Length: 79
Image 1 (cartoon, helix red, strand yellow):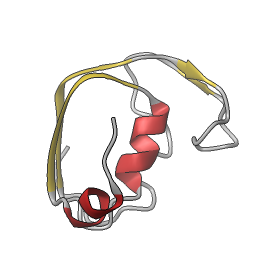
Image 2 (image 1 turned 45 degrees about the horizontal axis):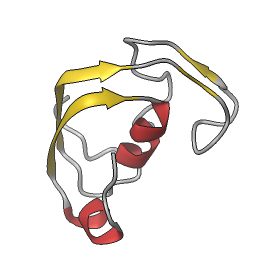
Image 3 (image 1 turned 90 degrees about the vertical axis):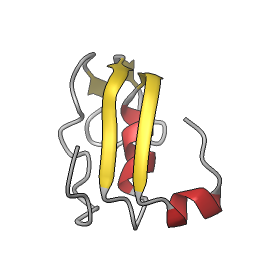
Image 4 (image 1 turned 30 degrees about the vertical axis):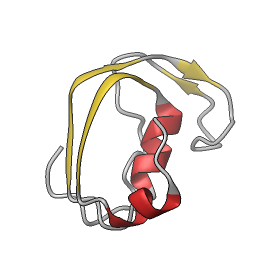
């Protein structure tokens, strides 16, 4: 998923489709105004690595939202 800085800082409702992994959840977590997230048509794929993720957890399983996803985003009201 690629969103430019303006999109990341202004989007309140986001629908994501296709494949995503732990790195995409980090991006969504940093969106300060995100309130509603629709990921029902996503496939969460496994990811192993420290690159741009929650660094103390290097292995992320398929079909699972990462353990600390959205810890930093208290605006989300619906996933």
